[in-house]
Amino acid sequence: RKRAIKVIHPPQKEGYRMIINCIQPDSYIQPHIHKLNNGSENWIYLKGKIGLILFDTTGKIEDIKIISHNSHLMIDIPPNTYHTAISL
Image (cartoon, rainbow, N blue to C red; front, side, top):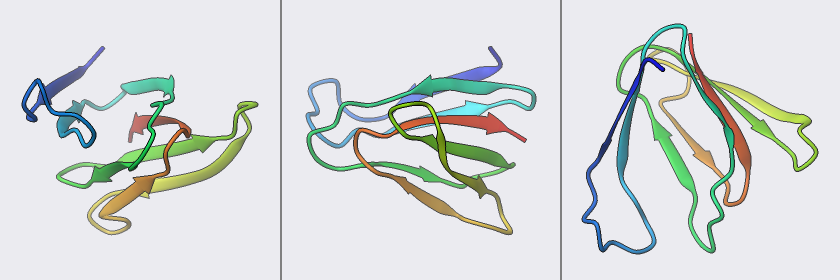
């Protein structure tokens, strides 16, 4: 799996959640969707390089972004968007 997740919001927190997700090289996060009524998911660069892929509801790639020190430092994933992340 080569990943570690640390939840840093209180367990009773509703709405906005804060999680640190560490992904080692040659690992990825399986494509998924968060059913959100409001807000979005934000990915913020700390170290390394991540490829973030956004899909439509049929699985077609809508966008590919790179998160690294020399590209995007933060990417906003709109609510109810399928996405995956790949460590590069």
